[in-house]
Image (tube, rainbow, N blue to C red; front, side):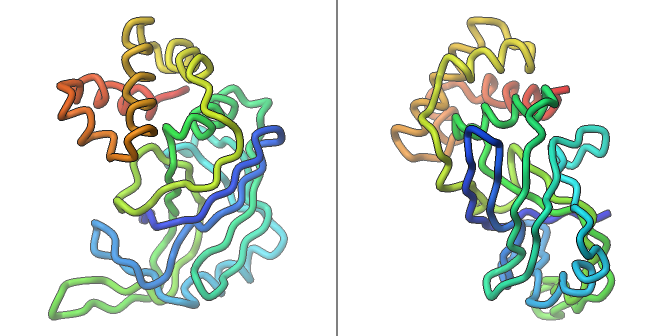
Length: 215
């Protein structure tokens, strides 16, 4: 199964866990050299009909966190609407991280059915794919891939609690990690670059590893 992270628009209802956004944007090349073309999902979406598309955490098939129950192609890309199942502890943890803007990416899991390769650039244009799942991810492949329009204020105490209870960070590590997130949100910079400047890159990489294994 292939995976592709793309630019997305994202809205999040903090009370219900409702998510709206774009899991894929057409004509945008990712770090793996793949470009999704308009129409690539149509056959797959017709075949699925009213069945939901699984919402996973970081492409982990053993970690479903919800379902995408509305999906279609528009002029921009793969438009999605779904629901985090908040009774699942991992989904609740992901909601807290989204609310804190510590997680802002989506990534699709799919089977390639038809494609063309540009001999000049090596880029692969995906003409037809079978969509398997769409994941909420910590670090998408595209720098532009990010969540916007998250409802609800940043709650540093809630994020610190999640990092301690779900990511097994010590209290001191959680406090430092929250400080990195707060500074990133205030400055509007890239968190990895910010951490490197602050001499805290190792800590942030540990945070990445921990948050990738929330279960």
